[in-house]
Amino acid sequence: MAENKTQATQKSVTEFINNIEDQNMRADVRKIAAMMRRATRKKAKMWGPGIVGYGEYHYKYASGREGDFMITGFAPRKRSLSVYILPGFENFGGLLKKLGKHKTGRSCLYINRLSDVDEKVLEKLITDSVNMMRNKYPTK
Image (cartoon, rainbow, N blue to C red):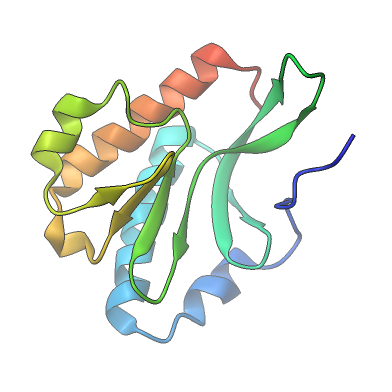
């Protein structure tokens, strides 16, 4: 059975964040990191070379594939900040309407800068998604 391409590493989250060149992105990342710490009550881990993740859950698909992955996380990218809302967005339409300027993928929320969104709504979205993951999967 193939393993996830993105695995937790022992790399330093602090060093990763401190090395973000854009000072505005670095400041936004620190605020989002604090939101995720509050939501998960877990310390951050690097997942692969560029994703900061919080908490872990264990999944097992009907196909037999299983593994562990972060409950939530973020990745600072050149064009935007990716926030991982792993249950997806089907149950969060009301919050997304209140959030502000953003785009979504399957389980990625893309924001250009934190000032484009309502931080309280973002934190509620993160917290609610973490709770949903904990209710659905075994977590660490």
